[in-house]
Image (cartoon, rainbow, N blue to C red):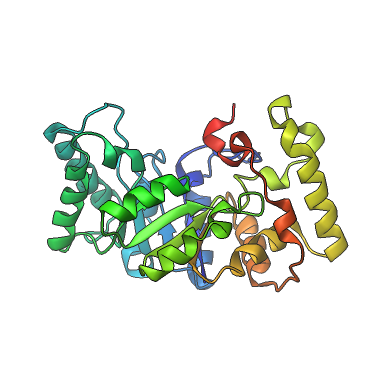
Length: 291
């Protein structure tokens, strides 16, 4: 398993526990330099991450130093038309130009459900065409739950699937989905391993919406203390224990955070009784539901 650098913070003020705000371009480039020195080879970005693609593309020879994965735009309309496909093609061309990367290592369908709208299969066909032209190396999707995964793998031949998994959200581990993906030789990229920073918050400071998560958070922090480890080490140790995951995508706001992330990733931890922290509350497990 490898550590991949998420870049949403390069273009947006992102994360429940983010007190730094949007990261400056200078600091982003410092982060990229440290990432390269530390052996991180994959960048995860998107056309919807503000100006993140531009920030990345302005880093010297970035395409020679990193594998870059970006995402398609999401479409709000109920039907996918030829106009959407033209917008998609234009978006991919723009992403390649901004990233200074004529060949994109990977493109993920950002809004998986777009594929299953009337006409949605033309999104996949357009990506396949770009792949045949040599402009895209791998095609994938970003998903939220098992139903989306089953829909995708039953209808499309994909290379990468990016999915949420963490100590609280163990659904895809326990229901056999990860094993099924491995059997199909689909690369699994894990995201939301810290539940968008929720693991690092003090439970008593959270608004009432998170009431159902406060007791589990207290218990998780106590467990980490008893194990003599940090929350980050515990969270990453859990992900590293899952053999089907190839990349774990994490974002940072500063070089110091990246140093701490790398240290946590490289630290071996003793895992015990982690399954007891698995939650079923969809409102907590899916940040799209957060206020």
